[in-house]
Length: 164
Image 1: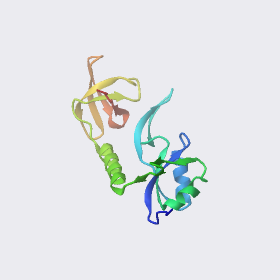
Image 2: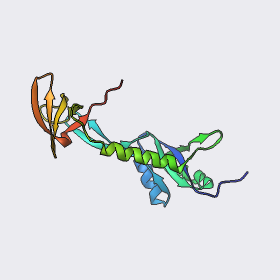
Image 3: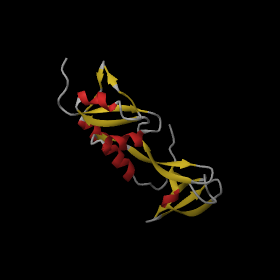
Image 4: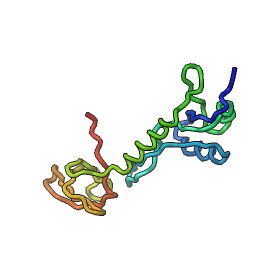
């Protein structure tokens, strides 16, 4: 049996909600690791905050040689290596780049006039409205349920994702 001497991207499965800590531990050991993150609103009883969360829950990518994967299982929080057809699953570089490009485009995707957003803070918290105007730091929204137009800071709204 031969082991791959070339470094490839592999996938590690982590304990639930341990991706960031495992990523930090891998990097501290000098292992090239990548945890794709995206910004998402999180709701608590007293506030809403935009936080960075993993794109793939409990998964992160490492670039190493195949024989090094076994040692990575000793890192606290790593549960297993993801396998495909009886071998550690290799992720192609172009696939990693495609995920990075997707995240970059999603982060830079601007709101559009007519798009529906939800207000995240203040007295209008959880009220949704349609974007009427877009300024540098704020939006003008039309709130259909109230029949009113309001001005809201850009950071205080989140795009409403409608599943069709």
